[in-house]
Amino acid sequence: MTIPKGLRVIPVSDRAWLMAALGDALAGGAPILPITDDPGQAEHAAALQRADLPEGTAVVIRTSGSSGVPKAVALSAAALRASAEATHERLGGPGQWLVTLPAQLISGLQMLVRSAHAGTQPVFFDGHFEPEALLAAAERMEGERRYVSLVPVQFMRLLDLAERDAAAAETLRRFDAVLVGGQAITLEMRRRAYALEIELRRSYGMTETAGGCVYDGVEIGDTLVRIRGGEVQLAGASLALGYVGDAALTNDCFITEADGTRWYRTGDAGELLGGMLTVTGRLDRVIISGGINVALDEVERVVRELPGWADACALGTADPVWGERVHLVRTTSTDTSDTSFADASAAVRAALGVAAEPTGETVVDAIPRLAGEKPDRAALAALCGTAAPDAGAPAQKTDDTKETA
Image 1 (spheres, rainbow, N blue to C red):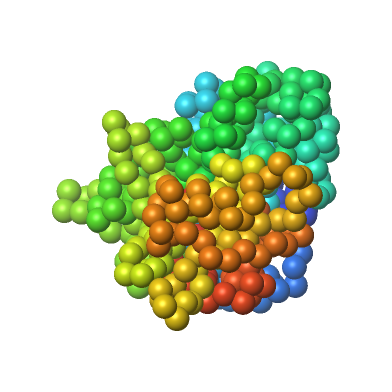
Image 2 (cartoon, rainbow, N blue to C red; image 1 turned 90 degrees about the horizontal axis):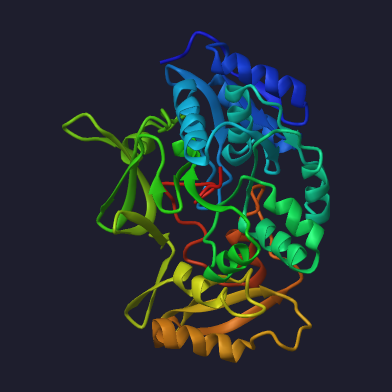
């Protein structure tokens, strides 16, 4: 049904307006759609303003499209508040947030929701990401408790700086929690953070859960996790109302059991071991090589532990003999200590078998990324000329991954 108040389109560049409109939406006022100044977003915004919104919508977020076509997710004020409250409860109380991620995505907007709900003033990080600049922004923070949310590529660069600069390490240690999500976090990154005594918290969630709902493998708030057919499914107060203008997708992704519990099908593969969630990759990021299923996310997990491969991406490419094979993409390096492609391929073969062994690589100056800093796999596939079976597959979940929030 159509809600009584029209959708307000708010440019994220106007922070005062954004904060005021968000506060009004959370209090029951007109729902908002945060957008960038990109002219291409105006057309999408106009279409959403004409669409019927689910009753109770406070915020509409267009996902980044990292796992398919971007979707418009309707979130209620209750879901956003439940997520904010659960986060602060798990982290030890409300605090001041350093906003480092795009506010048109749930990863950035949720930091504003937490700030509004707690009555604290966020500090915004401006400009292109540079670790030195981010830490300079952190020095402007005055809250007793300090939080920041990052994606792995940002956190990795901060670790690099902190390991060679004692002052930078001390600034990072002043955060009561550094949330990192959006992609898998390597064991090596966790070890480095531990050695530097940084309060790392691994976050898992997505736009459809109003942000992070599982920290360090454990649910927060009233979140429930189950595995069905190898898929991670989530329930709780922070679930979205559904997708704007797509009732079929809403009904497919949000299911209600006989007992009334509403579950979200994430499209992620995972396991529950000792009550802790381990996400192993996307169900649609699987190729068939020589008749054997190969999870591209697992290939990435192996190679990203190797020197010089921390930002590597795995794609699928057509092969006349095997059907599909793995193709790797990584950034240029002049460090002679970095692992060679041959050794990286051997490491994958040893860990995952011959079907997963990469048969080609492309070296680029920089990995193309989406607004939330996730790899743009469609752009990578075009750049490499691969078939990339995963690039255009319809997904049940987008964004942040494994969203950081």
